[in-house]
Image (cartoon, rainbow, N blue to C red; front, side, top):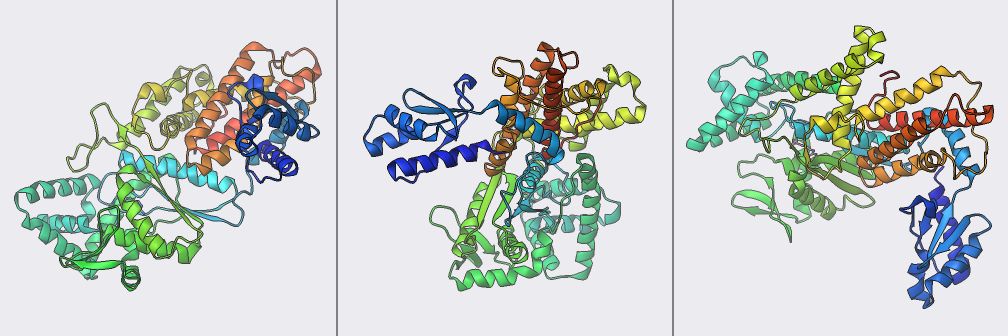
Length: 564
Ligand code: ARG
């Protein structure tokens, strides 16, 4: 249950009743839990308007809501709320009843979200930037689905554009058999070409004319292009399989080939474009212009993104389109969104660019141009083998078959990489670190997975009739309180993480939950608790913690093995 919205509602009503003012009160968790579970500064906000002392207003509101909420007032005018034991214990039982669906809601009922994510470029390696997009994009997709949105994932593959001209030029020159090429070969061709083109700028014109042939539908050129796409997709599937990611659609840029003329006309008719040095451009007040049609008639990434929005609107009528794409494309998306806006496509719709930062390896930024990309395959394989070693060395590992160990190693190794990424705010640059990824006592997937397995092992040992949380007083002074005061926040965190496109909020929440559980586990006996009632309560809390960890990890796309 989201207590927060209920508290908000009660305050809102009281303020309206007392002062005839409509206000949307800010309700937060106080930094210090002793102050209560929630707190509002509404009295301070009202003080100016009412020209009265905040403390007096706080007292009045407190009196007005005291029937339904347990409150007290703190200077300079905060009103603090405390959830009752009944409410907290009720929530534990709800978690254990609702199980895998705990935390889901119908917030997004009737609304559709498109998540544009992953989007690697054909003929290049699946890089670390696209890994971020895939991991964060999938987490956002899961979060939005869980809170009731109709969610559509679209992998906007980079399978079109002048760079294919480059490739076609190289393939033609080298007389290579396309089917035999690997993504590495293709990428090398791309790098070689650019080195040659630095000395011989005319090569670029050659590449452009090849792309033009592709856009014009030349059969032979299209065949080569298709073979290149297939080679790449086969290699990308390896990554998707390992990550357990399956994106609903992969229309890709090429899909919009035939859809651009209509969009170009629409832009033209609205008077948004103009001719400039043979090309057609869209100008903006506070940004450089974007090219709609190149001087040789070829379309651009910008044009294709406009066509993509148009298609998505016609096809799915989404209220939100989330682009999980690197921060280096900020200007591009500002141009696209502003143009869509001027075309009146954004009415009742939101376009969001979740601009993720870079992953830096100690060597510095990676670049395909210079051809020094760190291989994703190597990173992921290394992570799984580190995890495998961990399992091998653990006590549980002894009793497992080799196949079981492989499965767990995969869950832990892949989970470690995903969580490392997700635990940072998408916008921040992150420095790759095996140490942080595998912190066994810190904010890492293995730590959460261990905690989950530990909670299950407690439940395993004792087959109780039914763990049940019934009231035991006084609660606040007991070992259970810190967990009870944290568990109920899960649904709230999911809403916040989705609304702010920040899966890292969920990570911090789960980390804190795991820490609280581990202290509880260390401090008090669970199975050997004195008395059946207390034993039941502690088992119920343990089960609820395990359930919330499981649900949270699942939303992050991370598996929770039952044994570790
Ligand atoms: N393929 C592009 C790149 O790697 C990302 C595409 C993102 N999505 C989009 N609708 N533009 O740079």
